[in-house]
Length: 412
Image (tube, rainbow, N blue to C red; front, side, top):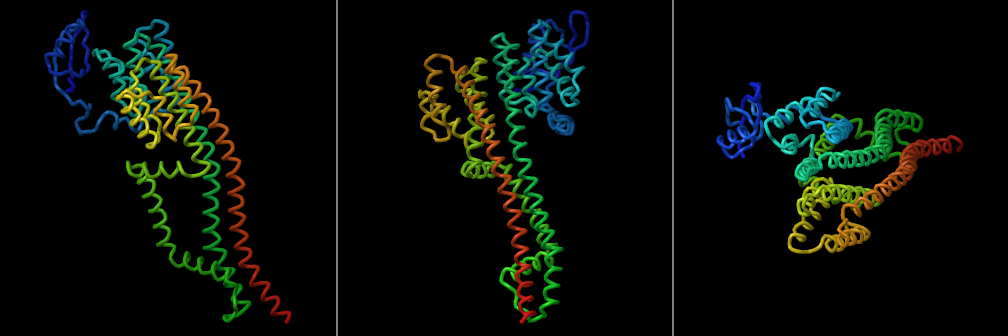
């Protein structure tokens, strides 16, 4: 639908500028007239809200990304103000003035203009998908339609807090193992590039050019020789390989392969499944509780889960529900979801309280995620210590072996 920029005056001759999505120019004029505004200028713009250089507002604001904590605070404050009877525009204006987030401040300035122009809040938020997700926009739209925007905003804030908590716990759990892995890699290259060559030189000086070295020592010296002789080739190849892998994972095909792989790795598989199930249950419950239709709730939830394997499963489930199947029966046949999810969904469908039941499922699996992450962290730490110890032990053995042999030769 085309996007129109307009300039109009209100009953007190105050000039108002804004934008509207409409079928044609006459529809914009009719809409403005119904709002008690007198159109002065109406011009067709770009539905993508592009600037003169062809960049979208969202991309221009990309450098000022809105943090999840700032978004949660904004949602809670907006909910409180709307609940207290403060007009929406006044509430948005107040929050725009007092927010400490530069990115959110800029976005809110555009949202306020759209709302002043007659756009629903959900449509205004939908123009900034990097800040306001599909779940957020759909719940706000349902809240506006049902007249319960304040209650929906409370649910949104709670959901965002829960999601942010899970993300922080997963990141926190992975930080320590990643640090250990980096230290192990640095230590390996440091030993191979600087320590082993010196030790090899000492052994050859002591034993002579014809000295017979153990196989382990020869292997370590060979690896060290390759790294020291061709580091200028190996290092760029490694860095390039890591960059390529990270970029590939961000592609559609890369995500599919990566997400299938992580769902087969012991230990990690359990955490990924529990996180996905918890996110599915809480998001779907929030949308259903907001009055969003089942099919739309499933489609939006599918894109919000964060795993393409689960995304495909939920999109397939939406098609099956469209054909008359119950969601609980579809979930029951899928190995990605534990049996308890299908059972609880069945109870929810029978009682008409699917959102309430799924919230209990979400709470349960969020607690399970905490336990699983703590367990994984407890396992990874000794494993990495064993790996580092083994590496040092191999180097020590490769050094002590020939030294012991030389000592025997000297005695004889």
